[in-house]
Image (cartoon, rainbow, N blue to C red; front, top):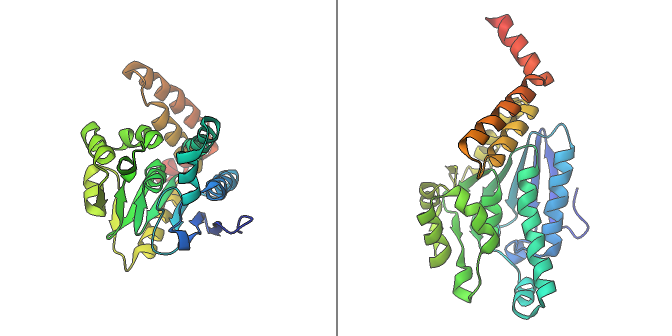
Length: 256
């Protein structure tokens, strides 16, 4: 399946929903159609009970180079209303990723810059090819990577986040992993196969348990310790009532 202008490719591969940014001639730069297409694909995957994991990747050499020229023109020339609508569209995408029940994985080859780096870091897991590059160059043109700061600050330490956001430098996959921005690095030659092997592990996991774990993890942001524990109690009880948990425990007890 493709969206109306083919900016997004959506494919089911078993329990894997593959979402491909399909503007390789523009280095998969973000525009309104691309953002809306990603959101539509995420909703489709979330509504499909057979899907266990979503993988977002980029067609061609790069994952995503950030905003396209038209979006930059809006930033430079648009009214407050236009700029607010443009910024809110990307914000809603980042928020939606956390609401998707299953893990959303960024598979990054080439460059993930500016909003593209934000898109990758907004995902639950980031898998990178060995030669991938990450960066937030916005400050070089007087712009602020504002919304992604909320995400980056939860991914890496305060000092690492400050360094990434204010120096505007590109960093390699190894350094990004050291910072905490990347989960795993795979070879460029076998990247697709290694990504597939990694994400297929979610096919064996309980969809309800993963969904509850994801919700719990992100809801704990900013909670006091006692409140986080209380929320954990609530989720623990909900998990016990699920069919997956009951079947899982019954199967385990039979083997014991």
